[in-house]
Image (cartoon, rainbow, N blue to C red; front, side, top):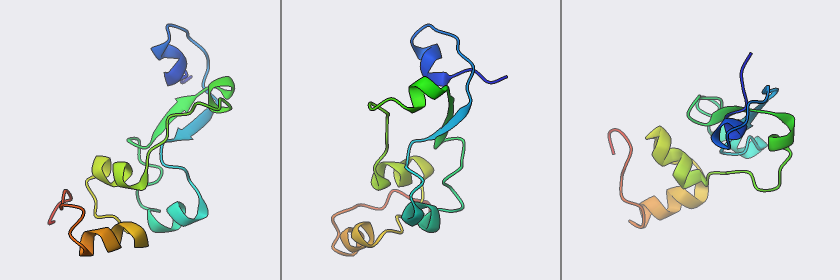
Length: 93
């Protein structure tokens, strides 16, 4: 039985029944990052109460790519890379 990682950080022990994705699993992100969206670095086990909270920790696409050490795939970030506004941080960058 997995325990809620968010509750544990606050000194509580509650059974987890959800997977929280730090980068939201929208259709766009699921399509762009299908090979990374369910990675353990992007998910945590959370209980229902924490997962329904309005103050969820979320990542931006850039933060997600930096954590995964991958080149961004979204149009906006690719444009910023081409303009030299984002320095390479990914493998082979």
